[in-house]
Amino acid sequence: MSALRTAGDVSLTNLTLSSSEYARICVILYDVAGIKLNDGKEGLVVSRLGKRIRELGVSSFTAYVARIEEDPSEMREMIDRLTTNKTSFFRESAHFEFLRTKALPSWGDREVTIWSAGCSSGEEPYTIATILCDAARGGAANGRILATDLSHRVLAKAKEGVYAAETVKDIPAQTLARHFDRRRDGTTDTWVAKQHLRDLIKFGKLNLMEEWPMRGPFDAIFCRNVMIYFDRETQERLVQRFSRLLAPDGFLFVGHSETLHSMKHDLRYVAPAAYAKAAQ
Ligand SMILES: C[S@@+](CC[C@H](N)C(=O)[O-])C[C@H]1O[C@@H](n2cnc3c(N)ncnc32)[C@H](O)[C@@H]1O
Image (cartoon, rainbow, N blue to C red):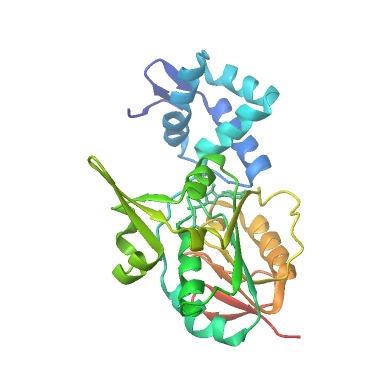
């Protein structure tokens, strides 16, 4: 289904999004999730929410906005549908190489705690788990991973830990064989995260804009390709909050298209999109 643009409004067969309805949805998305939609994203809103509006049998975007304002569960559903969840195993792989060759050796024998903030469907925390397991060389992995996201839809997928053959293509063959089981069922070919990986990860729902129940400290925080949807002020506040939760020799990893340049923070650049908390 493609959204059609007509003088100021965007339509999807009989469903029109006016500029004031679009503005209202943008304000709600920003207030609740910190996500800033730029101008020109009206088509995205229409295509992602149009289907939901039809499912509910609601007559217009105005009626839908009224509905989300009085129904917290529909508000969550809307936010969920407007988030972008693109991810992959070993995405921006230099970070995992850094974790394996620099960060883990620098922490010695202590049990490490890592947070994947904005973990989407789980590829990022499972990738981290493979690194922790492989570093243990057959012994018990010496670490724990907290993996959080705002979207219940992607979290359900992450907890399931079942991935299509196409999705695991970025995992090196031997790593895949060590940590995933192949499941062939008729025409479907999937890979399932083994129990020893799952045991390392605790998944939970967390909106980064709200209070965080965790005290830390974390040895590493991965918040990659999440802040790109936030404005500069929100990004800076978030980076300062992450920094307060980092161990004295901890690291913050952000997406490669994200930068902490010209923000106020007490972190030190150590590698592309990787920052260290200065040891006290
Ligand atoms: C593009 S994915 C990035 C996934 C992974 N970190 C990576 O780099 O591959 C961004 C994720 O951030 C989540 N997200 C967006 N706003 C959020 C918020 N306010 N609190 C928590 N998660 C949020 C989205 O639900 C989405 O799953």
